[in-house]
Amino acid sequence: MNSSSKEPVVICRHLSKRYGEGETSVHALREVNLEIRKGDFLSLSGPSGSGKTTLLNHIGGLDRPTSGDVCVLGRQLGDLDKGALADLRLEKIGFVFQAYNLIPVLSAYENVEFILQLQGVNARQRRQRAREMLAEVGLDGLGNRRPAQLSGGQQQRVAIARAMASEPAMVLADEPSANLDSTATEDLLNLLNRLNETRGMTFCIASHDPLVIEQTRRRVRMRDGKIEADEQAC
Image (cartoon, rainbow, N blue to C red):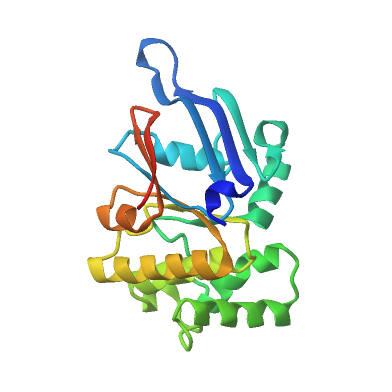
């Protein structure tokens, strides 16, 4: 069964976002309609200012639209208060950021455990899960190192392990290859592809990197806050 026949994880309807007022206002999103389905391995691409990061932030409940609706896993985000949105992100959505957002004073183990600690998982289970996730991303034996002791590619793998630790329904990644060289980017993409195929994780990746876009199986291209194309890779 391909992803187009599966249930939607995300539904965006007539989604618009405007920053500012009057003549100086900026329309970051304009009437965006998009469905992301379970198992999608999708890229959001486009030039700077096209709206891809803004759309990703709305899907993750990090920003509120000016108009329109976002439904994630059957829940209308507009109906949720800040606490409910935070709970949804904690339980159902994994985030991978361009700047990694690792906590510098914590080890790789502790960074991965952090989300699980917020979820109330006990210490023994947290450490076991962190070990499994770091091994999954190829960092077995490096769990005691702090971020400064890891390469950029290794730090990004810790960030991915952290995003995966709670087994989210969907992973949102914003320019995950921006600080990586081509070899590290290829390794990262192989890892994400494997997680998508073996674990059925849904990925939505905002990127302008051709190496990333070429590896995704669904490619949504944006321009001026609108969806310009939505294509399945051959």
